[in-house]
Structures are given as structure tokens and as C-alpha cells.
Length: 450
Image 1 (cartoon, rainbow, N blue to C red):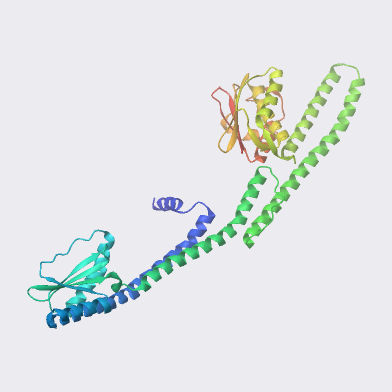
Image 2 (spheres, rainbow, N blue to C red):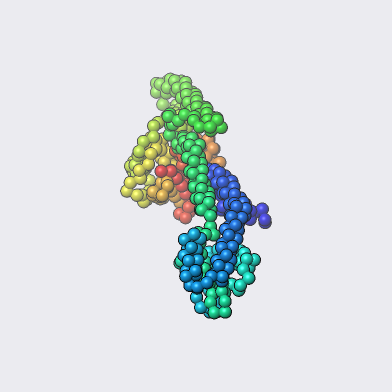
């Protein structure tokens, strides 16, 4: 259970793209190092620096309190106050003695700031002063601390200390340097990672195009050594597949040509022979062999070199439906007005004609639907025939596989129709699958990516 939870968290937290994961791998050490450096800085440098400044301020307050206590007359006190404002950046006021209470701070930041600074200031003053005193908290509006020291039974000294007296300018410089360096490093990492990811994206696009039956003549291996190696492997695979397809097509075309020659001679001899029962059977056998040869050639051309082009599938389906309806087939169609897609039109028409033809053979009524979705065009063909058992639906796509026991034997065929259709559809990067139809027979669904 725990491993499953960890796996789920990884899937949710990790970016989906290689670019995102690479940036995370780079950014995580940068952030960790910045956090460690920040901790060391604040724990060592900032703490010691602020401590020195606080103790210096406490000494100045103690000195001024002593001077004000020993001063004779208002003139001396005014000189001490003026010198403190000029030299020490401290505002000193003499006020009547009143009870002084600490006020609540207004924000979490002020509370934290006061806890870290005010407590140290209180300790430092306690060590330096013999008179009663009280430290007021940090006022974010005036950006000052207030220190109240009892001068005698009737008067008190009020010291207003600016915030800058207790902060070092290096703190802000360090924070800016920390953030700036992180941004610069992260920006450089993004630029480098984009350059490294670009060849992988080009390889993915080329593989996707090739999977859809499109050629990628301008693709060349670039990038890191591993990416170039994968690109070369892809190009070698593409060339091997092309050679295999060309050899298969050439072999079947040659076999077809070699067999047609004796079949043609046999047909000529039968044409001059007597028209008896034997000649009739021979003519039927020859016609069947010619149909088989045509089917072999169609199967070999399933991955033909026909160039893809923008095509309206609606026009292809209209032609197929027109031919079927002229032969008396009952087909009801619902299609979008336009179904534009980049396909090999002749091969696509052959595949769709095979699918619709099978539905017409095995069902009395056929229903066709074709609509454009967000990322594909989906075509479904339903019939009211006997259907295909679920355990045979993958087998029917194998070349030369026939299931006459579950279908009508009078329909004929040599088991290549759906094989040809699937080869062509897969060659376009699409998919084809069989389902139970709510019409009572079989449903064939074709999805071609846009």
C-alpha cells in the first residue's frame, strides 16, 4: 500500500515532460544550496553583525543617559540631544514620567522581527543600564524603535532609534545577490535545456509523422551523442521497413504477373473449347484465381508509396456509398459536411470500401456515421448481421483468416479485406477495432488522427 501511495505521489508531483523534469533536476540542487547558504549567512554573519550593532546602540543609550543625568541646566541637555541627533542618529526627548506599556504588533513579520531584534536589545540594555527602562516594539510606519529610560522620579528619556541602525546593508545586498544569482542560473539552465530537448522533440515528431505514413526526408541526427544514436537507429528502422514493404510489393507483383500469363492462355483455350460443364467450371476457377491475385496485390499495396494529401473524407465515403447503393445495398449514413484530413486518398478509399463492403455482405442493413472530434475523425460502420465472437475479433485482422462458420459462406472472400484495411489505417497512425453493435450485428470503428 505504501509503495502504491509513493508511486501515486511521484506521478502527481513529477512534471510530465522531459523538459520539466530536467529543469526540476537542475532547480532542486540550486534551491537547496541557496537555502543552506541562507541558513549559514543568517546564523553566522547576520546574527553576529546585528548583535554588534545592538550592543553598540545599548552603549550609546547608556552613555547618553549618564550624560543627561549629570548635565547642569537645560542648555547642556539641549546640546547633548543635538549632538546625539547629529552624530549618533538618535532622537532623544525628555518627557514627564508616565506608565509605559508595550503595544501589540500588527503583523506576523513585525512579531518575528521584534522577537529577533527586540529581545537582544532588551538583554543588551539590561547589562548597560542601572536605571529602569522599557523597550517598545518596532513600529513599521515610522520604522523606529522606542527606548524609554527613567531619568529621575519625575522625568524619563525617550530614545527613537531608526531601523537602519540595527541592520547591515550587506543583508539586503546578500538577499538581492542570492535571488539574482538563482534567477540567472535558472535562466541559463532553461536556455541550455531547450537546446538539449529540441533534438528529442524533432525525433518524436519525425517518428509520429512516419507512424502516420508521412515521409520525413529532411530529418537529420543532431544533438547529444545518445540522441544522435537514437535518431540514426530510427532512420535505419525506417529504411528497413521501406525495403521490406518494397520487396513484399515487388514479390507479390511478380508472382501475380507470372501467374496471369498461364491464366490468360487458359482463358483463350477455354474460349475456343466447347461450351460444356467442364469448361464452365474451369472458367469459374480461373475467375476465382484472378480475384485472389487482385487481393494479393491489394494487400501488398496496403503500405504503398502514395503521397499523403489533404482530402475530404466525406467525398470518399460518398463515392463508396454511391457504388454500394447502385448495387441495391441498404445504407443509412450520417456524416459531417466536411471531413478534411491528410491521408493517402486511394489507399484510404480501399480500406473504407473493404469495411463497408464487409458490412453489406454480412448484414441486410448498414448504418454509417462519420464525425470530426477534437483530435481525430471517427468513422463507425454498424450492421445487423450475425456479428463476430469476441475471441475472434483480433484473428480476423490476420491475413487469409476466414470464419465462414460464423459468417455467411455465400459471401466468399479469401480473408484479406480487414487485413488490408488495418494495414492502411495503421499506416496513417490510426486505429481500428470491433465492437458489438446496438443494431444486433458488428460495429467497426475507425479513428484517423488529424
